[in-house]
Image 1 (tube, one colour):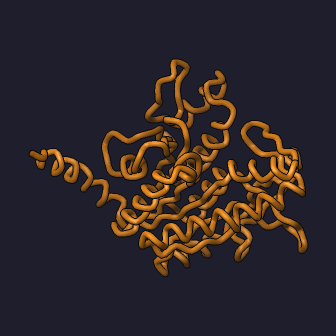
Image 2 (cartoon, rainbow, N blue to C red; image 1 turned 45 degrees about the vertical axis):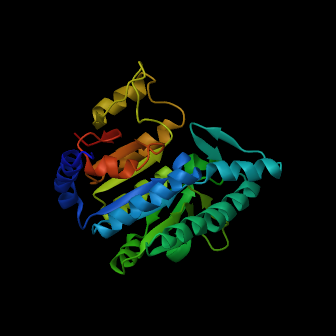
Image 3 (tube, helix red, strand yellow; image 1 turned 180 degrees about the horizontal axis):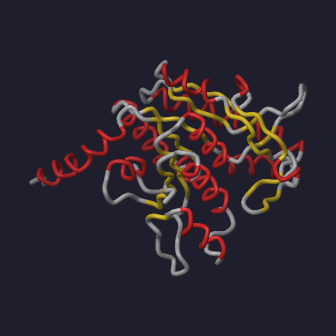
Length: 284
């Protein structure tokens, strides 16, 4: 016999969270296995439908590093990473924009639309959504740092009941500039701050932030996170994700989350259950 009381208990546990988030804006950085594995892609789409139907306003910022790497390797275009960020040459930038703004963005939009979400795909170049300059004075080539985010564009789409799906490329500051590749974590952070999101969630292929013993740290504030930087616990590809989280909570986003996108329905588990499935960041 089915355990009906357990099912009801789960529903009742979620009610306060549904009430709390209803009408709020939530930015989701979509990447990793959740963006590649067909089963996880399906479940991600269902999660977005659920948020949409509950009156929450999701905004999706996606990556595409694996597909970019595949094409760069096939075309024999060199690409390296420093501190988790791609060093982008002018040749690599053309591939980055083609993959992100073309192939991946439209694939996500079509998939969400098929599942009943009114999704609309744009890039950071559309309506000058993102303006950028070279990151660290050109250390990373055509990888940029966002200087301005046009939050009005996104808010207008949300007001018309669209789910924006954003490719992380940006405009340069002068006419004819080829633009910039933007780290998707940084782009998600910039969007969350610009639209006054209640939450920003980063889907990753890790449990969250782990301590030196490999145990997940469920909750961190700014001071605790800075200590983990100093002792080397946070390093490599986790650096831009954690920096993006800290930028958000310093700028008014209530909480930022790094969650394990390999867990089915991880978005719903993080938002609507008391246990959660990752690391949450707050200012204090």
